[in-house]
Image 1 (cartoon, one colour):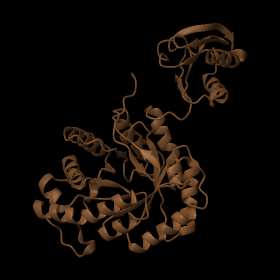
Image 2 (cartoon, rainbow, N blue to C red; image 1 turned 135 degrees about the horizontal axis):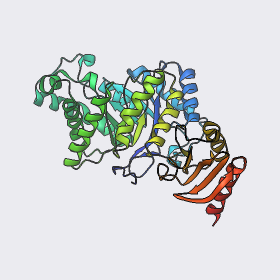
Image 3 (cartoon, rainbow, N blue to C red; image 1 turned 90 degrees about the horizontal axis):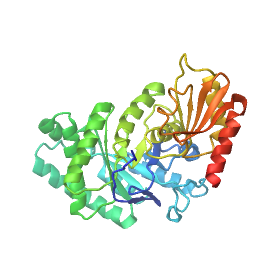
Image 4 (tube, helix red, strand yellow; image 1 turned 60 degrees about the vertical axis):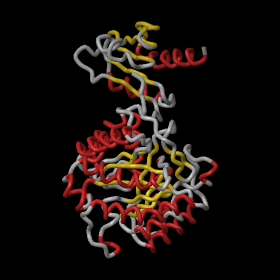
Length: 392
């Protein structure tokens, strides 16, 4: 079955478009103090080299906005180009200011960053000497009054806004009404989105994150359902927050992000690992590849092998990969026997299937086009078939 992605509106982020039919974008976030200009620039350059298309930087204070400007200035002197850039990007990878709390900081950051991230659960807390508000009308009136000037600056500077709701930072008002639930996350997000709409501002990206994979998936699916009901087509940012490090972080991210991608949900992803940001990028592209949301390399299908396997399957997989890794977007199967061959590899473009001791069948789709090829010639014959078909 073909992958059907939910069609969203296009939001321009620093000259790198997000949503619509553009590729699902990959982003990361630096993990150094914003004041460490040299360290920030070095991390960003490593992330760009790894394939990042957006980079987020923590920007909690007005001083950090000044540091963000310095980082942007440094990057303008030479960032390696990448595929997502357009002429409008001026060769600078889009920087996203992660604000959370302060409206004053968000307004200042909107004059510098390509996108500003705010969190509805934090935006009216006590950072600016406010007390928690529990009355719905008072809360929404005050949130609207605070967001209006921010939206005006975003319009003026062409800055996008991410409304990023976290499971662990819901407001007291939301918790009192909905509890610590996906429903509460959705309500908090939609309140902020509706304020944006009332101000005719639509350069919005939304996200619902949790360290609990089930909550993150359920909340995002529920948000999409509600947005569809209200005719909203804003792009989605996906991620499992505080996923961890190593295998744990990779597995949680793959399950949470991948589950939504195969539903056709998601326009940009961030894999949140307790590691340096450049290590998040290969994992993100791997998740996109596995879910077939964005193909950036050759895909291989291979069986685990069993007692019927009559050649060294692991060595065969290695040889086929070495010979075909340049064939981006192609699906190639390496199977141990004809039991797993034609049926289990039906989705592959080409197949390399064990047919007996030292013998291999070469398939195009479900059809064996060469039979009983000597194993020491089989990779070469596979390439000949691929090249012949491509040229014909």
